Amino acid sequence: MTLLAIGLGIVLVVQILCLMALVDQYKGLLQIREHLGLKDAAADLDVSPRGIRASDAGLPVPFMMEQRVVGLLFSTKCASCYTVAEGFRGKAPGGAWVIITGSEAQCAGFRDRVGLRGERILDDINGEIAERLLIRTFPSALLFNGGVLAAAKAVPSVREMRRVLDDWLAPKESVLLAPGGSADDGH
Image (spheres, rainbow, N blue to C red):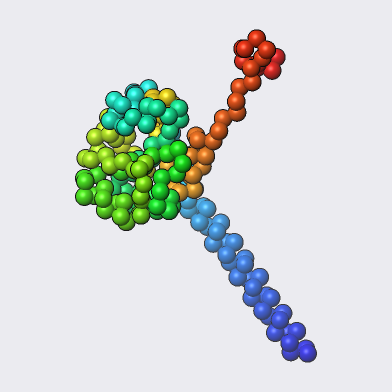
């Protein structure tokens, strides 16, 4: 019985040491990421000219017809783009369009590799749409309000892309109308 207790004690001590080593490794990785300035967060893109109409960029009619729509811009030359697109599990997220920039063959290869299918997938042959929108950072998320470019973000990961989509496409609270028909601001 004593031998069993000693054995369990040794196993417990080894597990505690392993846990402490794991915590130390995690702290080390955080320090490295901080030192290198690596952040897994979406960054605003300075898109000029803001207010460009979707139709002027060569985007299809639905970009003009929907009140809020997001275009997810991927390049066939970008490793992060493949990783983020693979996270969509074969289809564009609701309310979003996937725009793939590259040659016709590269766009087809991108779709095949990440398994994207559906009608909300656009090929931006030779980067004409991205060029008109002045987007040179991939992967990117572009918010259009009423067919007009309102915001753009560089999005480095699937997690951040989902967060941006949730923020931009979540139903907005409706404005309550006062008896006279004007918006009630609570005052």
